[in-house]
Structure formats: structure tokens, C-alpha cells
Image 1 (cartoon, rainbow, N blue to C red):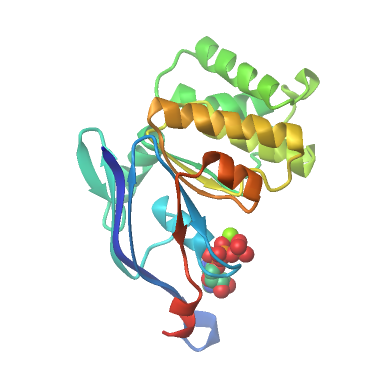
Image 2: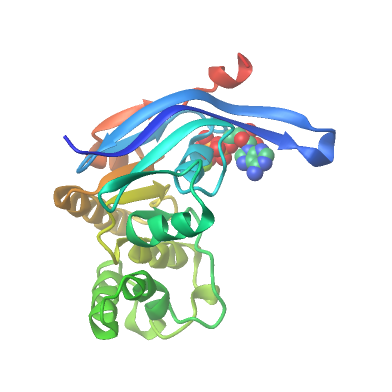
Length: 233
Ligand SMILES: Nc1ncnc2c1ncn2[C@@H]1O[C@H](COP(=O)(O)OP(=O)(O)OP(=O)(O)O)[C@@H](O)[C@H]1O
Ligand SMILES: [Mg+2]
């Protein structure tokens, strides 16, 4: 077993500075190791902190205490303590993240949105675009949309562009926040296949999947993010 990501005694509070410093505890003392080739599904009721944990694993949120160690280029990086330049490097090389909604960049065509992460790690432009095209085809994005910026795409189309972007590189670690939430059954099946292929290549995956069918197809185990930890705090 090769551990790719190791979370130790992680806690997160939000402090609402605009509301008299009210402290909202979200999760407490979470510990989790994820191995290469394994898919761990974050599980728990709405509001229990699943997305907040996933955002912390991408260093979008800064945890209150604990550590998040990621295997990066032969060493370990603790994302709770890493300098911004190191976080940029980890995101470029090691950790991919498919957020629930595509952050649309104006005027950048869908094909370029998808190909960009592969170009950033040095794949020649043509190879990156070929990979992007093959993913857009598999995800049933019609070719006439490839040269258009996704701002005007439907919710499901935007989500599929987002998924293609997350799979254009073989990231060692991949974080997925409800990647199939607004997809039809056929496209859900494509996403299941992409996840299974990534696992077979050795990608360590942490995901949130509300859809039980997707969860059963891809998850090796569930990790409970429990609401009682909040009310107990
Ligand atoms: N940036 C933030 N500032 C303040 N509170 C936040 C912030 N982000 C999340 N929270 C709070 O943290 C708690 C957990 O939210 P989170 O989005 O992580 O839940 P979730 O488990 O992903 O829920 P769902 O299943 O509905 O997506 C919620 O009570 C939410 O209001
Ligand atoms: Mg969520």
C-alpha cells in the first residue's frame, strides 16, 4: 500500500468576523489515510462538512488544527503549513480537484479549459488538445461547442467540461465534489468509467457522491463525516 494523502487530527472552525466572531465548528479530529488506487467516499448528512473537508484537502480552506500530508515528488507536503508557491506546485503536479461547479473563465473556449492542466505540466499543445478532445467526446459534449467559452453552457454541460478538465491529466490524487450531480444516466456511466480507469492507474481518489449507484460502483470505503461532532462541540 502506498499512502498518497494522510490527514491527521484535522479540525475546522469557521469564525464569522462580521457576526461578532461567532465560531461555527464544522469537523473535529478527523484522521484518514488514502492509498494509491483507492477511492474513499466522504459520507454524512448535508451540512456535516464534506465539502469543507474536500476544500481543505485542496488547500482552499485552512484547517484550525491538524495536518494534511500529500505525497508530492518523492517527499511529503503538509498543506496546512505549505507556502502559497508550494500549494500552486502541488495543485499543478499532484492534486486535481473537480469542484461541484465550473469556474468559468470568460472567452476561454471549452477545449482550452480542458487542455490547460495538461499543457501546464509540459505536455505538447497538440497532445494536450487530443486528450481534451477525446474526453469531451466521451462525455458527449458536441463538437460544435468545443470552440465556445462554457459561460453559456447548460449546468450539466459545464459540469462535464469540469470533469474533463479534472481527468485530462493523470493526477496522483484526485478530489471529486459531486461530479455526477446534474448528469443523466449515460454521462454518469462515463464518469464511473473514468473514475475506475484512474483507480486502475493508481490514482488516490477522495470523493463525495450523493448518487448511491455511483458510490457503489467506485467507492472502496466510506468515511463518515459526522454531524454529531458539530453539535457536541
Ligand atoms: N466559507 C464558509 N464560511 C462559514 N461557514 C461555512 C463556510 N463553508 C461552509 N460553512 C458551513 O460549514 C458547514 C458544512 O458545510 P459543507 O458545505 O462542508 O457541508 P456538506 O457536508 O458538503 O453539505 P452538503 O451535503 O449539503 O453539500 C455548514 O454548516 C456550512 O454553513
Ligand atoms: Mg457539499
